[in-house]
Length: 326
Image 1 (cartoon, rainbow, N blue to C red):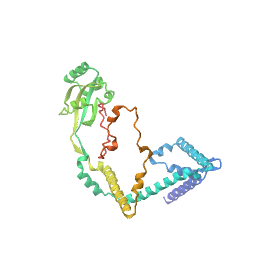
Image 2 (cartoon, rainbow, N blue to C red):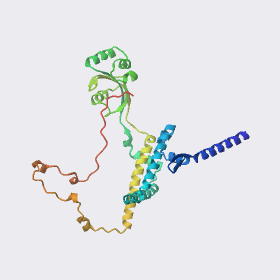
Image 3 (tube, one colour):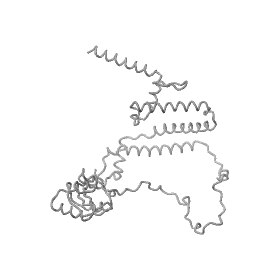
Image 4 (cartoon, one colour):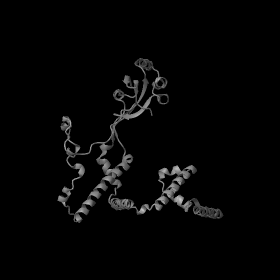
């Protein structure tokens, strides 16, 4: 057993030594510049984890190496052209440097001042539980037909006792019905076609079937398959969401207070009169055109004249979707 362990250690050392030796080898030569395996592997390590698979294969590594070669060629050309001494480049580099310095400062400040405990998360969840309330959902199954006459024929078969799922697989023009038997899955209000949804949510008992319902896609016969009553999303499922939200709110407070403290501790003097004199050329009054149409005078006030208020809700409206199978 002891000998086996020693052999294993020696094998690992040998493998490490071989890899290290291989890393020192020159992978590619570009004019007088060289890229070793060590440099190439360091470049590969910089790739984000979610993109690692793109360079896992031999072809992926070759593609990435080609990009590295192009990068070296462009840097070489930039050096020949003295790009780094170009005034515009220096100005741009100074701007980027300033931005990075500020970002680093704020990152350090915000990281140290925005700790959120599990207790804080739980308190927020309990105090805002209604935000995590899910409305009643229903699961339905449907048979979609082209014409009302076909729908009546299928309805008669249902009334005669034939199986709803079997009829959906046989007659429904919903492409998923062949596999699912017409099952749509659980949906809350506002996520299905209005006509379909209105009829489906009137069904009170599991197994109850609707009449013939017309939508833009044809004629539906709907059956209620299941009901989920209103419920609260468990804390464990929204914990990370709450944490991210609270961190953002707390960081904003920390940042606002930090900036306010900096302003208070600094001596800031603004020449307001001089600022008033600096009128942008684009804002200068323009002479009214002689050919302007009369109705132009009745134009609505510009947005800048509108009193400031809370931001509009930019959340896109819920789409009226066709009933989809699982």
